[in-house]
Length: 232
Image 1: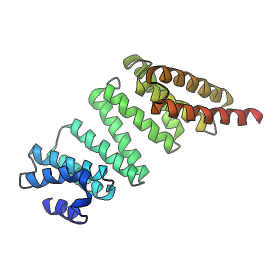
Image 2: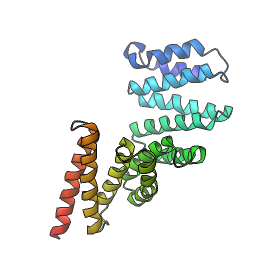
Image 3: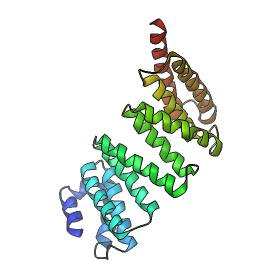
């Protein structure tokens, strides 16, 4: 494992890797320790995240996959495994390996449901990200099914004004208006939903918040889709 990490590092000049210098320093400090020690695993995690921050995603992938493999072999707690898998999914996305990223996010969501239950805040956060990934891959029915189940939970647990509640509702509206099989009634419902979400987000976060900006763009797109359908 130590030779593997060293080979990854030598492919680049450390002078260009300010973002991951700390990770490399940590790894050099602990590389002689047994892999069963938590300090060594944390150093590997720091290196992988640093590589990602520096946008060296292919090298980050090698480190993160090795980290996950080691964790499985050592039988680390499930919560730590899920965090590693979440990080790996982000790296898959950065490399354009979207199907792998989606499968990993599905595994992470299922893992949190089993570990913490559907009403845990962490599970709801993961559900929001997984649903967005499903919409991006145009798997609208899967996204809508997941969100119909989790949005009521988010509204009850997190509240109407919570960022993840609004994000899930916005994603559901997007799944409606982007799906070409959506009925005219559902399209009108998507527009009404986005109007409400924008009002809530504007009041809660201000006009310049990214969620408000994104919601405004989605609302314009949804209105355009609705107008085009009504003409037909």
